[in-house]
Image (cartoon, rainbow, N blue to C red; front, side, top):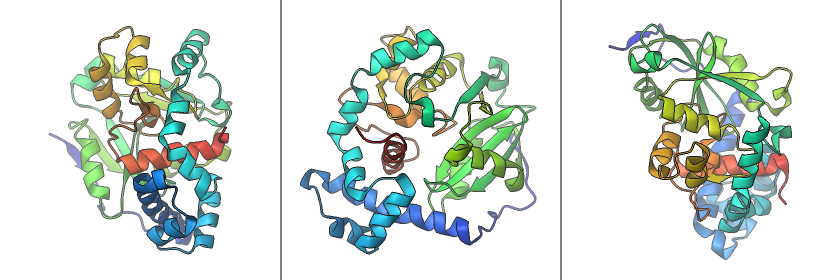
Length: 299
């Protein structure tokens, strides 16, 4: 039985800066949905702005502030051709990363994550004996639900406005016997480390604790090797963990990744470059890939 040690179920009230961040993503989300549907016709910025309910100037400045890209460049980052370019030579990139023990090219702007896995017994017992602290925080991709143990970040989920408790319930089902403590203040530093690129420092790595089956952890560890600005296919991952016929199982493990964005399951694409299903929504996956394109620069 899940134990909830929660004194106040309400979300922490965001300040003006947090409210602005959430409003930005809401506009971006609407623009992305429109671009995703119409990119083949290369819509004008006026059409994009209309879909996002902002002016063209506002949309231009919003995208520059949010991702470091113009709306036109962001549209390029969402096209199938760009997705295919992310996959190009992906297997060799992953080979080099694994062989060297490093994360591969492109990590200059990445999270410098260190990780450990909890024992199979801790996963098998549904998290019994674990105390998981959680909080709700603004992020470039909507409300982020940050979950942590004493050993480090163990969960990261996302929610649209009004869906926060549903997303939280989805996370608690992964470890139903753990004790959950609402700790917005205590998880705020982790949220800053994840989403503030100025804090992505190799001398202060972000510690992640992976809680899953042995197979899932192997898949998630492989995801951590994919550099920002690149992507791999599910079959590439299956080959790297020496289970070349397990693409479907790899896809399922990717979908169960409990540490979204940090363990970059959004960088796993279909073999054709298709943006296949994403647990937190395809629009959010597109937002992450476009945002990352802005961090490393489009080729």
